[in-house]
Length: 231
Image (cartoon, rainbow, N blue to C red; front, side, top):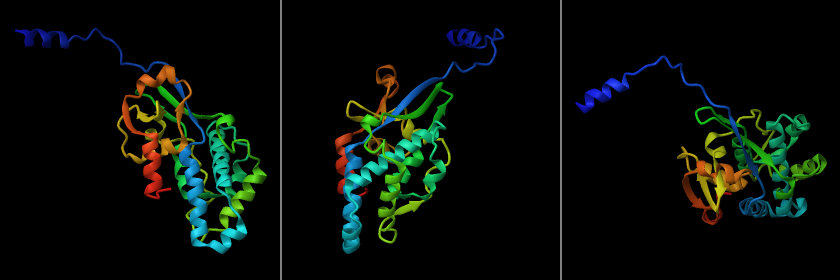
């Protein structure tokens, strides 16, 4: 009897129209200098010294330069996504370490219409080393990196053209020392990019309840990436 009644009520249709999406909420995802990025700077320079010691001594590329240069590129990426990048055409001449380019390509705007969310990148120069770097200094560091074209994985004219980011990366963030996500990511590498970019919610109090899937803590990821020499 119950199933018959349930079926009767489930067939109710009072002419309600198709559902519409509510007004979009915007989540700002902030990038800043992470301990892992600093580890990357050290590893990048050490690899250059290992593969070409004489050249490395002459070029004198430092880990601090690599870290601040990455900060400059991330700041320009944020500006480009917001359509405020005045240096876009000039950025084409720059040489970029492959892992940094991999991260840049996944850091951008994501719109999730099902959840009514727009996720956009943002930056605070106070928390990003190199965010205020001049273009001229960036070119100088780029030329140092270019000297190792034969020894290291680097790319030229590699700034992403699209403003879109990767949904898995942009829906993950560092909360209470852990990488958390709105949903299960397709590949765990997305959580490593989140840790590398030190992605955090600008409005954490308002939106952290949406991030219910928890992955590794930041210190474990940092140790694992450096131990495995991924970076």
